[in-house]
Image 1 (cartoon, rainbow, N blue to C red):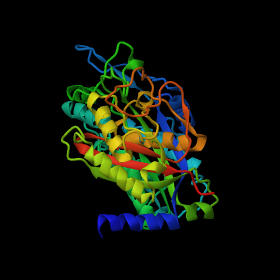
Image 2 (cartoon, helix red, strand yellow; image 1 turned 120 degrees about the vertical axis):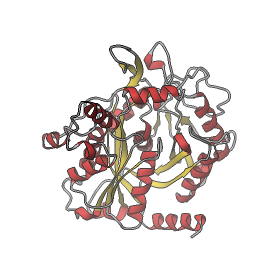
Image 3 (tube, rainbow, N blue to C red; image 1 turned 45 degrees about the horizontal axis):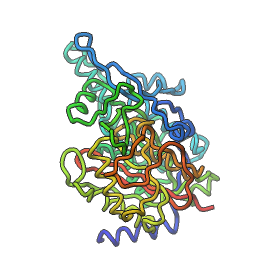
Image 4 (spheres, helix red, strand yellow; image 1 turned 90 degrees about the vertical axis):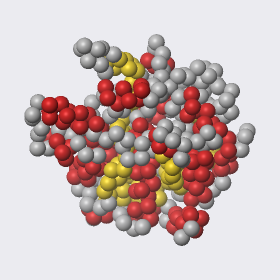
Length: 421
């Protein structure tokens, strides 16, 4: 099939039986669930604080958005105690979504329940711990299993009893969007009846901070809460964060049969790669433009149907300017709908970020409220967008679009609409 024929086939399948979101869960800085996450986004205040990442010999600190300690049911605590923090954050968020969807009470065939997790760096803390153990000649028998990215989806699958499609996907900062898109395709191909899909990341460790610092993407400000300033003329870079978010996706017909509530429709999606180099996009954001157009086409929409964009908006000089240029190409100059970046509130949680932003996009649809871009004081004139600043705005019409981009030009775009009633 040609690309256009594939898009048409997906669009027809979605028209006949849409994919809906029936459960949501998250665990992030200042947010122990989707409602708290959205309230924090509407408040437009960053929870970033200083975190020590150095050594006693060379102390240093970094501005970061730190999630609370994962809260797992007593039955899960023993089996999860050796898992990496990223896996425990992901398990916490996934179990929230699973319960929210009512799957704990559903008589669902385990072979029809799948789990797709996205992560950019995986169990990096456990890997570093194993390296330290190796230096002391004391590597434990579980180190190999607990240090693989597959431990994330594996731990979730074990916990909920899923025996359907399962994997952990890595697509840098577009990982969770890729996971959600992959889960949607499993549903379209009837490989599952329900899918847990999302992402998790716990990158606040000295190695990761050093890598991001060397890449020149970390922001700085005397006040850590002001470190990340997307689209602001004085922006200096991102603030790193940790967290997890998961959705339950089902075909609408399956959700109706079990009496589940549909909170939103995953109307369209697309993934792709921009050959711009190691750190991201081409100067004209060709990959973002192409992937966004495919996602909108899958949804059987045109750009004018989109009423809000939750932008990638990292707060780096290059990303924000290039993304703004790409959005102007997608919608046309002067026709881009209201845009905001919520990364100052969540921190840049790398591969988990697309799932956190998907929850915010869905909440925007449900409430009709659009979150502002925290810390935006003076918009960069090179970013010719209608960026929401200060107070929330009202969603006046249309669906919402969420963009995600990462190193090596990875791109993932999701389109959400109100569910059919």
